[in-house]
Structures are given as C-alpha cells and as structure tokens.
Picture 1 (cartoon, one colour):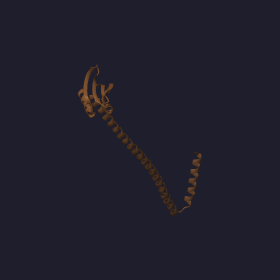
Picture 2 (spheres, rainbow, N blue to C red):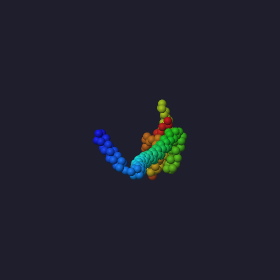
Picture 3 (cartoon, rainbow, N blue to C red):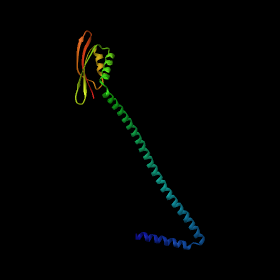
Picture 4 (tube, rainbow, N blue to C red):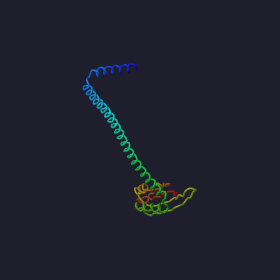
Length: 183
C-alpha cells in the first residue's frame, strides 16, 4: 500500500512539474486533450463492458431457448405416450367391459370366418365373490390351419383350457374348452 501511495505521489509531482512549465494556452490544450482521451477511455471501457454483457445475455438467451425447445419436445413426446397409453387402457377397458353375449357373438363370427361345420356351443357360468367367468365347450369340424387362425384371432381375455383333436374324414373334429372372465 505504501508503494502505491509513493508511486501515485511521484506521478502527481511529475505531472505538476510538467503542468507548471506550460503556458495558459498549452495548459488549456492539455486539459482538452486529457478530457478527450479520458472520454474515449471511459467510452471504450463502457462499450466493452456492455458488449460483454450483451454477449453473455445472448448466450443465456440461446441456452434458455434451447432448453425451452427441448422441454416442448419432451412435453410433446410425453403427451403422445400418454395418449397412446390412454388408447391402450381404453381398449383394455372395452375388452373388460364386454358382456357375455358380445364375446359369444365374436366367437361365432370367427367360427364363420374359418368355415367351421357342425358347430355346437355349450356354456357354463361360474360365479365367484369378485368376478364371473364362463366356460365354453365348442365342437366343430374344420382343418388344422383354420383352427390355428381361429386361436390366433381370439381375444386376449379368452384362454384355452383344453383342446382335443380327432381325425374326421379329411378334416379334424375339434373340441375346445374356452374360459373367459367378466368383471
């Protein structure tokens, strides 16, 4: 600290010696030049300061805009996922909501599609505390490929309990026990 004060005192003494030797006209000119020089020094330092702050603000603005864009994309993907899961849940709910007659009609339509012959359907109803389930005994005549396509097209809530295949002429006599619950 003492060195800084000493250096400032020496600079002040040096400037005082120079300014004392100047005439009034030279003194005024030196004051004007020092004012202009000081103005430009302050102007450029402030300009650089504002320029740096402007660059920092632009960088922050760009990073925030990028984050906002990423968040918008994340929101869009999340909404698409939610919509897809809602559709899946709606389909599952519709499947659970189906009643006995609807499921029986779907099975009959699928049997018609595979051109099953001599179709016999017997149903038994079992009731528990929490849900009701039905057991369908299907007897029909068809070929093996038609049976496979019928089984693949069954609703997910319908399960095969038992399957029996007997050769009947060139076709198969098929006995299926299907179980499905109704909530």
